[in-house]
Length: 461
Image (cartoon, helix red, strand yellow):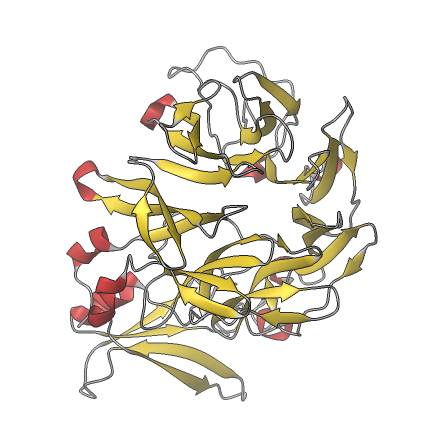
């Protein structure tokens, strides 16, 4: 049992699911390593309850699908190696995908406008930069490096409108990247988050901004500290929710789910539940960051981690309940009306997609079914420190109960976590004669604020 090195080519990562607004189908990105090309390849896969999964596109690098509000078109991004990315439009009832608008540089998101023309995208510029830098270069501002791209980004990620004929207009430009976007159900305004100018030179903090799409207007800042805000989402009833993090415990501070408008209040979630976080995995290639999603008229779907598991929770403003998906570590999810799709895995299975409706969850893919018979079992144990604190660990390769060399596998962060899912590297190490202990020491996520705080100023103590 256990994976070998050649199994890496067979592992499929499912990401960026989107549900058709009218039919019982979900489109997602099917991504796998292509060693012969020393790269990866990604195509669009469609599946649904009782419907065999099939490919919609041939790749080699298609991603970020999004349905138009009427379901007539599927928009997506097609990468063209070093030549930038193209925005593509595929008729859902049949036909060939066609490019719309110019090539983009770092095209990162597609959001069709409900009842409107075209889509909103996040990108750096309509054309990739020249291969050779232009010298000399004149800088007018000393740019903070927080965006993680480079010290002096010539073209921050901005918000663009691309109409049905391909005409492209920049809607909002800042010296800082726009991170995530949500459009109101009526298509009249958009909300997004980006770093606030006056905080960039100290401790960078993001705020939520609102921009009117029906008339020329300047962005309106909706939050003003002291928390840092991200991933705003407009719900079906027009309310706006987002994730917020304070600085009470520095980088160890757990994010919280807030209603931003019309009121400013924290939404109820069980204690020690860490929203916006997911368990570490090396079998997923490029999942998008966790963010709230609208469910029904007033509900919110959000992934949260607790004690080695990541579930999708439905929050309706009064109570919160987890979806009953037989995959304790969710990676991605999508929502449309009352329908939710969750992509996740367990200690005995790699990621698959699950359709959740009317309280019932059913698998709709089997892309990684081959791996079930090769997975070496993992035991969950608890290690008690001298001070009485219990440290959880996931131990793989002990089923033979014979002496074998042990690898103590420590995650990074320090606020990461291992959990109830399969790791490829662990399985390969077991196949080569080792027992592997994946430990969640003090500071790991999913065990509450006090457990996170226990590592502050005392790493390894």
